[in-house]
Image (cartoon, rainbow, N blue to C red):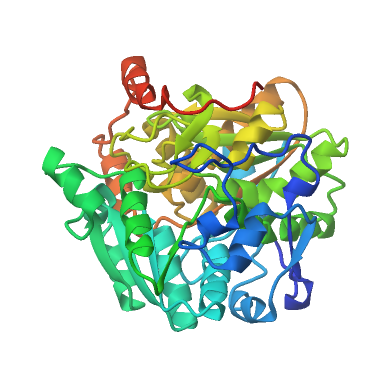
Length: 457
């Protein structure tokens, strides 16, 4: 049987973003000012973000309307298709029914434009002229470059150096869309220069790149900072994914879903798919929600819940999240988008509330699952989303061992067309697994010991 492709008409696109904070049993604890340790207010964020995004960050409204100007751009590729993966099911020999929401059909090849377009729109409406941002694997940077082009904004991207070297075509894509791209740490900021003095060969990290982008925005009156994950408003914008998937499963004749899976770095693609289904779980549905991360950067599975900085130079507010410590620099695995020391406060709180659970995988096991998927479904997945595929393989096997037939849904958050060097390393036995020593986690976590502590959980 050929794969089933479930499409929605453009008229069926969501007209509002879904806000999980309206339904969550325990709202995230407030971010704190890095200087005073007190809860931050809108004025504290005004140098970095336009007011519309600040208000979305703190909103508890169940739905927030999507501006028509944003919908006009999203219509270029949305609604995205949902596939029933018959071929993968046969390759695994599973009785479960597997569906994937394919976000790789966007111009940038991932889910990231869903929020990049919204952020560019609100910044342009607020009169900002320029965006400073960071990127790991390059999917966020390319998405922001694309979105800035649509709304007439300049874009400066600080790209984690190891990914800058591993993924030159992502840089070329950003530059084609008009962005200026530099490897991070860079000589362009105080934070970058300080890191280069300590370690001229630093591979960089998302924490360092965030420091550089935040410093850039804070020191230019015409510039905003844009983040591709972690923050509430980013996760909010991504919920178009799960809302569409809900409708598509209905069209496929499924009365419900048993397992929802996504990969997690900061948490945007995972939350975009999962949050509308977690709403169902809060209401009583029996759904297992699994967040998949790399064993080399095991934020949810081995990091404590604590207040920590979102960046290495300690410029951002203190955020309540599962963290490995703001000066943690993960190994140079190919899933650059998952090499972040913290997880979104919303995702972290939902983990504490037992509304989801987390699993961590080694790099070679992830690529083994990715190749199985590519050879059955025909799509070469990004290394990040390959973690979700590994989670699907394991979930299907557990169901078969238990003698059950489950409906498994996952987010195929992007294609891997610019990641072929990683596949080459795997296929020829050169891909390394990185087992993170407990001593390294303990070292990195010492940096957060003096910081305020979250309320007991």
